[in-house]
Length: 266
Image (cartoon, helix red, strand yellow):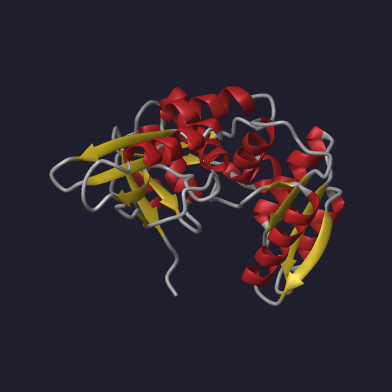
């Protein structure tokens, strides 16, 4: 029987963000298509939007997990009463020494919790029934604060696993929001592993800082608001860490605007 080789695990946690591809290679004929279709159907029951195509010449079945403007709009509707519609500051490009006619700044530092992360956290928590164990997340800072903010607003408990290097100010902010702060190890990877063990033991809802469909779609609502207020810019510059924000922004624009990633040097 022909084998199936998966380049990635088709799970709802990993098949999350815009146009992430899972390639299933049938290697000989279409006899494995029923199995691949079953995988696609299973992902759809988990509310992971997927698209299945088959390349007869190369004998490869491609299973796409897609996230687009529809998911971003649904996130906006779901969270409109939870997140702030942050101000959009419009300046002449020359004001900041930029060679463009006008520069738009979306002031997400004024969002609940102090960052755009609240958008994804609220969308993830609003998208499904919440277990009695509440929500659990691994974070060194802003994502944990967003999770704690959303959990407190929805009346559920929140555990945040932080690495030892998490700043005292972030830990204090988490505690002030009612979160249980757990030091999960020296580095973020250690805290993430401890978080996964805790989730498996308690059944709490796992919230990821960036790699979940609801988190990505929630982040994309920033671009939806921007367009609603000012239209479509020529390009949008997005700072990148894990990639959740830029994935959501790109999902909303869907090629209508050039999206560029910015990273710090060093």
